[in-house]
Length: 185
Length: 283
Ligand code: SF4
Image 1: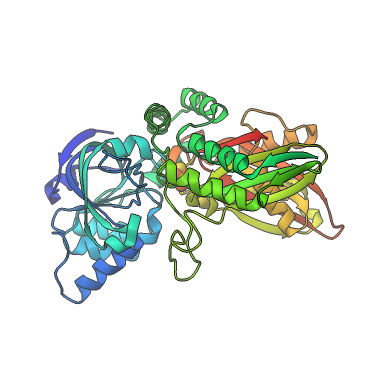
Image 2: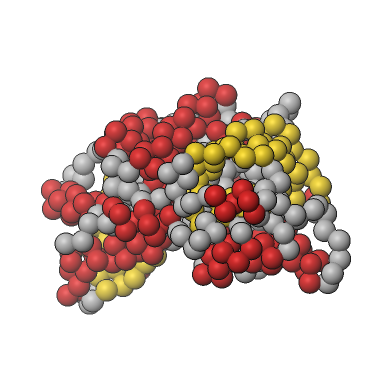
């Protein structure tokens, strides 16, 4: 298990070094989107229309933050459960996105898309919303404000801690970790 | 008859919501410290360390522990010698919930089931609260509160078994539910198991079981033994913190058992994530 620090946007050269279980500190711009926003983005891609941000090398964070306190850029902001994005993520990766941050297992389609398009699925610690929110230094709603917590935000992160769950070789930390510690009678 | 002002209930409920949103209860904090110390996997150890650091930041800076600030769930025991002056107890609890969620900058997470529209502009901010009432002897109002997040609620399940399933059937069922859930409910988890009663009684018992402090023992020695047996089995699954592999998938198993129909054995499994925001007050 290695540790890396990366600044977005990511390239295939970056993502291909990573192996399930590695820890990464992320810096730079990332974008937030949950189910409703994903649906709209994928609809735009399919219609050949312009997206609210550049997908190339982007990292998408599955999060619906709490409202910020006065003076803060964002409230608590930990990951939401990722499987709800499984049907959308392959299209995002195919169109240039290089990574996703969430929690919980992904389906085979997402894992295959990570292999095919050099994508990474990162896990952040669920329920660590206060800690993760503090690593976000700016946040701005750039699309779909009517979705409230589900709007797309452009956020700047500093040393945002994530772990590689699915890498570009088809490995899955959830399966590997569990196999290692499972006790069979 | 003791008289309690409507506004006093509103304020008491608001205050516990504010407190619970940012302060992880001591029982959970202590159990997580022990889990971190005994966890075999370095990856899971680091996850639990982050969970504890998160709890410290949330408490010191008054930030919500988790962005999923849940639905507000209450178990209320109202004494038969108490009268609320100025309104209904249910309305007071709902008002206190709305004020607490607003004042603490918690997220409004309730929505209409099909349109998924947020109800904050129509019904109220994170309303209605889920309230289970009971009437007891005395002149006090006893309120247990928890903020229940979606991730752990989504993996919860119930089933009515034939009586022959017995304890072995229950152990296997809990294992199956938790195994399928993997990392989704944010382990290390607490598992509430409701046994017996009717279908809905088992479900409500499994929820109420989660309000018990981690580290406390079941008063019934037979159930205490079953809790320990299930806990050992769950921690053999290898799921670990956030599903990353490890030996501390669950912190505790809590059982509430009820008499049931001669033909059935209802069992409900309600899962609580590590962000176990719960408290108890008496007015
Ligand atoms: S399961 Fe619990 S800790 Fe995880 S995101 Fe939901 S409320 Fe937060």
